[in-house]
Image (tube, rainbow over all chains, first blue to last red; front, side):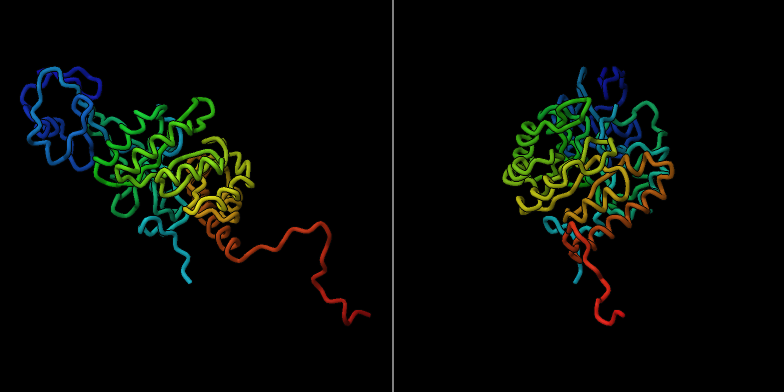
Length: 71
Length: 256
């Protein structure tokens, strides 16, 4: 299955759900937020969120930032 | 009597709030924030590095249980993006607070106040605690509070400029106009700028570049901590009025 994760076109072999995808990339769900095709997925729904070919996924977290534009 | 800053039931230990960007590394970020005594730190929402999973995370150094995390929408130039980043920030599960920035122009980083007002209204209705970064405009400050913001964050000067408070009279009018906390955000350069903001009666100051960009960020963080305390004490103490002519402080009586 091909997914676009954080702008990267990637081939994912095993993961069928969002929870499995995060596991495959060793991402702890506690500190991130996830969008699938522009809809935010609640943490409690990660296990039931089934992914399909071509889904656009955004996984974000917090980084250092103050008051300016970050490139 | 204790002089604590409380916003919507949240008690803040420090009136100095700091950003976490522009530091040399996470170690310096941590040390500077500790030296500043701040208990609120701002953070930005960005993509996780999915390729290099070994890269360190800010929260490995800044414990989110020890600090209040204030996510921002830095880099957002329209309402839609600001809403999207705010909702993602809340879903990350650390805070309902949002430092709302809708930037109007890349060169000045001045806020687009029309977009800011719209976004404030929507997010306040969704239950966010909205802290909008705005102009030093008393009318807009009032509009933002009326739209549901829990505080206003007028700029002292352009972000990162270090120019200090360009219009103390407007800040003073904002303080009289809004019945909500006023937190000066952006543009302060050094400790005296922070002291001026606090002496005017502002409830807190948020800064980043003035510490992170100093030659010795940790020493500057400590200077800022003391400036906030000094400025607040001076405000509470009530300064003497300014006069054109001298007023002798030694008695005339008993002179030869």
